[in-house]
Image (cartoon, rainbow, N blue to C red; front, side, top):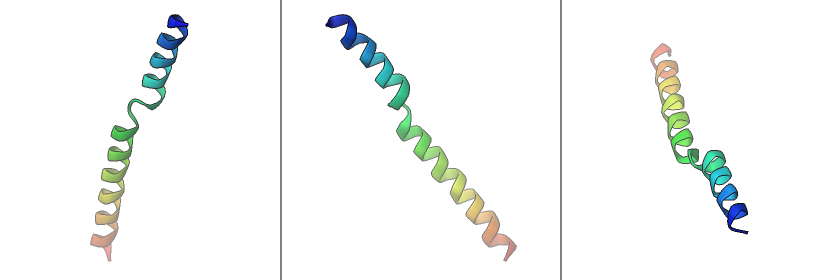
Length: 41
């Protein structure tokens, strides 16, 4: 059972650990695109 718990912790960290960072990067990129688009108008 302990081995399963450790494997699941690693999987969870690798799969979902960087979600906040990924969301933050996507929001920054979208803001940059919107700013470029607004500047062209």
